[in-house]
Length: 142
Image (cartoon, rainbow, N blue to C red; front, side, top):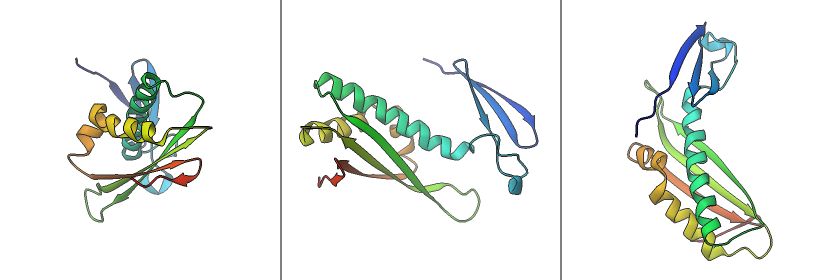
């Protein structure tokens, strides 16, 4: 399978990408020569990672017949000094809420998601990715 996108320069530091018919504007702030019309490209990597892992987790939990939960993923990354200013660590926080949630199934779904998410597979070769999990605001010790 091949993925193709088209990215066009809009002027200043703004770019518009067409991704499967969805338009994403990327820009920087005035300090960087832009007008802050959209997110920066590098944080979009965190968005792609969170979305990919999240979709895998939801799919796995559905197969496990886990229902009635809320779920968010927070992603935070540290950038090295110098150029290029790449991420050297990404921290993911999985937050689940709901009644009678199975800690075992949630942990299993998270661990399996790492095996199936291609964005994780690519990024984990370049940067350390660590995570923590909370169920109903209580951290789950793995």
